[in-house]
Image (cartoon, rainbow, N blue to C red):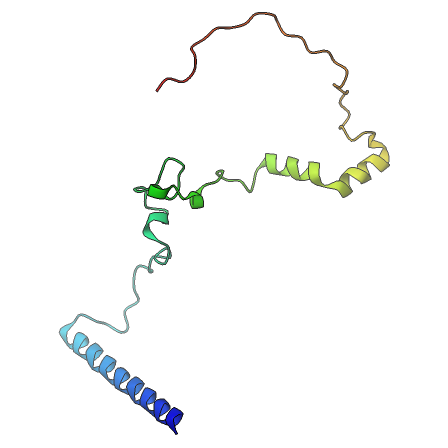
Amino acid sequence: MCSERKKNNRESILRKRAKQKEAYLKRLESEGRYDPNKIPLTKPDPERWIPKSQRSYNRRGRGRGGGGGRYNNKSNVGAQGGGAGAGMEKDAAKLDVAARVAAKASGGGDGSGGKPSTANIKVTSSGTTRKGKGGKRR
């Protein structure tokens, strides 16, 4: 019986709320402040649920690391455009074991791509050392 009363009470509250909303919209319409047929020109901000300090258009309050501001929370940090480009394809080709095995089987040799090995080349330096400033001065 108690749950039935709660259910009826909730329904009556929802009915009352709908009636109040209708009256409010009618009042706004009569004042000329609301048009139900008008399509809004701008869509609501898609970042409105993200904290203000982490939104893309907020430049204030970010620390040196690029994210988080005061406590230097590194949540918005990373390389720019990390998912595309020639470098990414090259790395993917290196890690593709099946393709490397197939290339080796087809006569690719050691998989170095036809370049001579640099394993036994002796590295020499010119012998001169440059002296510059001690480092970055701030």
